[in-house]
Structure formats: C-alpha cells, structure tokens
Length: 267
Image 1 (spheres, helix red, strand yellow):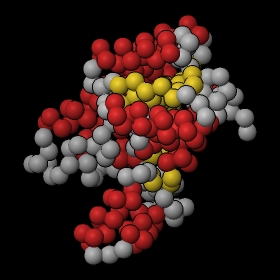
Image 2 (cartoon, rainbow, N blue to C red):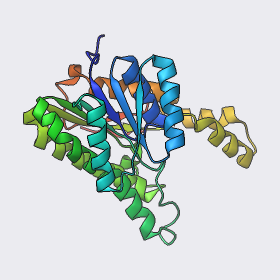
Image 3 (cartoon, helix red, strand yellow):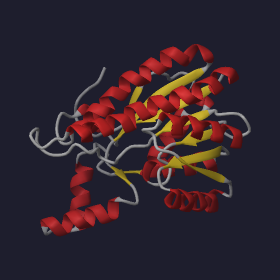
C-alpha cells in the first residue's frame, strides 16, 4: 500500500538509535525528508549518515535537549527552514530507555522521576507546541507519540509507567486541540522491542543468570501472544502508517504494538 508519504517532511526526536532511528529510516525510505534529533552530535551524525546510506536520502541531524524549551523551539525553527518551511510529521520518541526511577519505593529518587517526566511528557508537549503553528497553517499534520506498555503495568520502573500513562492524556488533548486544523495525533505503546541494544543486554543478562541468550529471548517472547519479539523496524511500520495521510480515521488513540503482550482486555 502506498502510504502517500513521498514529499512529506518529518522530525523524529530521539532519532539516533533504537526505535527512533528505525522510524527515521522507514519514513526516509517511503519518501520523507527527515530531521533527526538527539543530545549527542557524534552519535546523531553517524546515524544520519547510516540512514542516508540505506535510503539514498539526506537525513538532517540537529542537536537538541528535550528538557529545554529554548532548544526545542530553536530545533523546530531550524528543522522547518531545512525542510523548506514545512513540518508535516512529528514523531516524539526521545526518552531515557526504560525510565530512570528504578528500585523499591524507598530507593526511588525524586530527581529521577522529575527528569523522566520533563524529558518525555514535557518534551513531547514542547515539540508538539513548537510544530503546531506549521501544521495549522498547512491545514495538515501528523503527530505520533511513542510511549511504552509499562503504562499498563504497575510494576517495575515507576517513572516509566507514570510518564507513559500520562502520554495517553496528552495525546487525546492534542488531538482535540488540533483536529479541526487537519492534524491527527496518536500514541503507540511498544512492548519488548529488538534494537541494537538488545544483543548486548540479553548477553549480559544471560551471563548474570548462567543461561543462554536464546533462553533469555525465549522468555521475553513468551510474554507475547505472537511468541516473538517485535523488531524496531516492524514497530516503525506502525508509526509510518499513523504518520501518513492513510491514517485519517484514527486520532487521539492509544495503540499497543507489543506483539500481543499481556492478557488484559481494553475496550
């Protein structure tokens, strides 16, 4: 299916690795002009060159910290100029993988929770606010927020769950605010997703537990109804659809893309 993305422009935050990099690659391959953002210039430039080598398209790296309103505003202005004055698509993805507030209630540090919320929830809000005038003027736009299935589990990392739960409300708010201007806003919740971090992470866990990488992966996959781990590119296909004109029927929704993780039913 032609997603009608050829000629569109996109900003992907947290685009230097993992899901963000996969999304940038898929959007670029489908014909988008893409800006990727991150905090580290070297990693960002390397990823831009890598994606460009795969797709044959120019990828524009812009360094920005999502916790800074000034940096976000400057990034969007620079991106819009580089993209010919248009911002059609925003994929909000920048966040600390897995969240920062780990451990028991007594061990959780206030500053870790606040930084997670500032980076992800406020960071997504800052970016949406900065791109909104471009999309409103155009009369068309797509914002796709990347959350996480920790939003649906009250276990493990506290701030990961809190920040991702908050994104559902933010997403619906933005959809209501911008919908009449032709802008659709949706949230995708990844589950366990295979990225470049997965191999070393599984190897470390296997060594720690005295087992094999294959067994660690089997356990992770067993939590999904598909009995397999979702690849970052597969997740990126979902994002690309929601970023496309073809997704006009969907806005303000929270969509799980974790391979059928969990057994709860959501109406």
